[in-house]
Each structure stands twice: as C-alpha cells, then as structure tokens.
Length: 397
Image (cartoon, rainbow, N blue to C red; front, side, top):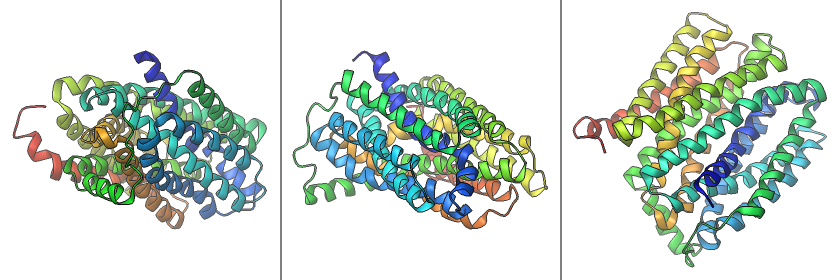
C-alpha cells in the first residue's frame, strides 16, 4: 500500500464517524415528527449510537490485537451496512434507536482500526502528521455531509439520509476487500486472556501520556458533540432556518477544522507536539469565552454562534491529530487496546453531554453556548495542569 493510498483509506475510515453523525442531522427534526418522537428520543438516536460506539471499542481493540485489523474491519463494515438499512426501514423511534445502537457498535470497529493502523505503520511524531492529513480528508467529508443531508432530507425525506450511510459503508467495505493489506505484523496471542487484558488496560490507563492526551481529545470532541447534538434544534427550531440552510451552515463549520489540521502539520515541526497542543487549548478557550459571552448578552444569531465556533473548530483541528496519535504512541504492542480506551473515553464524555442537553434545551442558544464553553474551559485546564509546566521549562520536543 502506498502512503497516499493509506492516507486516503484512513480518511474514509475516520470519515465514517462524521458522516454517521452529521448526514442525518438536517433530518432530525423531521424524523422526530414523522415517528412521533420527542426531543429527548431524538438526542438518544445520537447519544446511544455514540455510547455503543465507545463501549464496543473495548471489545474490538483486543480482538484486533489478536486477529489483525483487516478481519475486524470487514466484520464491522458489514454489520454497519446492514444496520444502516435497518435504520432506514424503522417504523418507530424505538426501532431507530436500536438500529443506531448496532450501527454505533459496528462503527467502533472501523474507527478503532484506523487509529491502530497509524500506530502500526508510524512512530508517534510522524503518526501525528499522517493523522492530520487523514483528518483533513475527514473534514472534507464533514463539510459535505451537512449540505448533502439537507438536500436529501428536503428533497426525498429522512429515510434517504440513512440509505446514504449504508451506501458509503458498502463502498468502503469493497475497498478494504479489494486492496487493504494487514498492518499488524505480530498478532498478540494473549490479547484476549482476561488476566493479560486487565494488566494491559491498567498499564494504559495509568500512563500519564495516555491519560493527558486522551482527556484533552475527549474534551475537545465533547465540545464538538455539543454543537452536533444541539445545532439542528437551535438553527431550525430557534432561528428558523430550513433544512437546506442548516446544511449550508454545517458545510461551513468543518472548513475551519480542515485549516486547523493543515496548521497542525506546520506547527509540529516548529513547536513540537506539546507546545502545539497548548496553543490549540488556548484557542479552544478563546472560542468558548466568546460564545458564552455573546449568549449571556442575549445575542441569538447565526454569527454569534458560528464565529466563536469557527475558532473552536480551528483549535479542534490542531488538538485531534496530536491527541489521537500521542495517546496511543507508548503502546506499539497494544495499539488496538489503547486506541479502544481512547475512543471509549471520548464517547463517554459525549454521552454525558447529550444526557444533559436532552434536559437543558430551552428554546434559546444558551445550552449550546454553555456546553461548548464548559468543554473549552476543561481543555484549557487539562493543558495548563498537565502540559504547561513541561512546555515552558524545556525546549520543544
């Protein structure tokens, strides 16, 4: 596999996550009404998917360390395609939630494998640059998901947005079958033994590098998830946007993220990994403070939400490649398990945020702003406490 092919395939694998969450967001109010659901149930179609996504990685990770990445990818993508078709045919919110749970569990195999593949092939510093390239591709897919979802929902109905997910997964499944070569050179025959697995988990979760970067990445993703879970109800329900107009908003949002991933590739050779992450954390805090300040002063408009969020997404584009690569870096022989624990933490944070949003949405922009602002503060605090002293008392790595 050539480097360009690896990056392209990684982009599609990682892109399955924003496509799964973003493509159907313009249809969320529509399908909630069509299936006689509530706002809390609508949030559950997203939060339950992400909880299953996070928890499933705890299983997929050791399995991939034992049997290899390719087999896990094939199983996961096959199950994802089938569950997306089941979601499309749902006749009630309960059925949709169940199928989304299966879909989230299947998605976990793909995302976990992608992160582990980076560690299989690259050392941490190079891996961060490769990850930033793949996440730039993810950003492009996230850009397209909103407008495509808005067009499909507005033109053909909410079911077609879910059919589109099945088609994307089927294409990705075909590519893996066609030209993906196994990257795990030495499978671990003891990876599934309970005693060995428990010791590996404990070794990973107490490692300061894993803990610091995983907490940072989880907080950064939770800020993004807050926007994803609340934005359709805010823009369509509060600000009166149509599905297509909301799709265009979602198109613009990942552009700043893509620019952030490009900046990440330029910053790492100049500043080192830790200084780059501290800079990203500072920008996250700036975006959060701006959003909360405008909301507290009573502003409810497109620009009072999006301008601060563009700053946050630029910072997210810096934070994610660094944290995802660095958190797995110390564990070359357990990359799948480490990637799984990292993904589980991210989804646990997101699920907690979704639970709060289901109760906090009050017909204003404030819950969205306060949620993003909270996680921006957490990002800055973790960076200051865990990385700040090391960064400013020695030369860049």
